[in-house]
Amino acid sequence: MIILGIFILFCFGTALGSFLNNVFIARYDPEQSLFSPAHFMGRSRCPHCKKTLSASELVPLLSFIFLRGKCASCKKKISFQYPLVEFVSGYIVAGVPFFLTKFYGISLLAFFSLAAPVWQYFFLGVWTIVFLGLLVMFLIDMKHYIIPDEFHVFFIVCGACIALIYAFHGNDFFPFRESFLQNYALILSPFQGIISRRFFGAIVGGLFFAVLFALSRGRGMGMGDIKLAVSSGVVFGWPDIGLAIFLSFIFGGIWALGLFFRGVKTMKDKVPFAPFFVCGLVATVFFGHALMSWYFSVFRL
Image: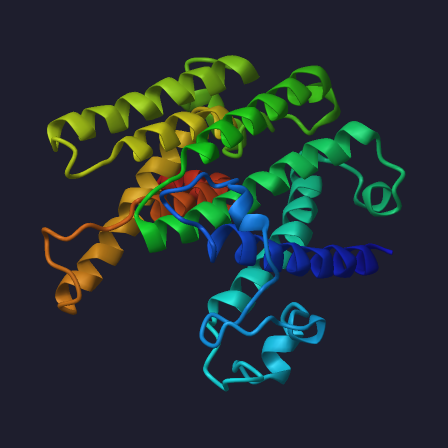
């Protein structure tokens, strides 16, 4: 039952990833809204010869494999981004609920047998949508060096939903699950309430990036990064957002130094920050508690 449920979710996720890639990522125009009607009009086409793709050419993952990564008409290579987004989306839709059921103490069998309470499906669904949103934002910022404002509103709404559900059903979860850092949040946070932590995380994250923006006069950070820190603070709260910011600078610094020493970038070139911030958030969710355990174990030696 569980394995079948995970497989079904993965297949659904790959189809959803194909939709997100074709509609929101590939068609995104910085001059238009993320939800511009133009993005939803027209069928998918080959980016090279503009031929309308048939249903057999749009099967997630399998079409790319059977076509050997080439368009059936013009034989030009299809970007590896397409199967990659489909696979990662499938992994998110199947993997995030699986991880969170174990993290929060939700019955995995009840979840996949459709016997769990409705609010649990909504709760896990919101978290899954958050991760899908992070994926889309990651790729848009990588390509266009911009974070659409729609993402900030989206994350704030999702964060509010997560906080409200936890406020009403927090007793149904394992202890110390208000934060992905679990018991370490008791040490690192001046607040223990689910709402206050998110409010504090939004303020601290926004102020931190605002200071960097002011000190660098807009060259080191953009307004989009400030808004992202605020909206992400609402979703993840404090101290999770603090660890995510710390990790994002480590990831970004390593990547930037690699590009610099390879001669791909200079110190004056722009590097999108949102992808590293997303990596920091993901690492905090899945490895935050383990990282904090390792960090504090160093002082016990």
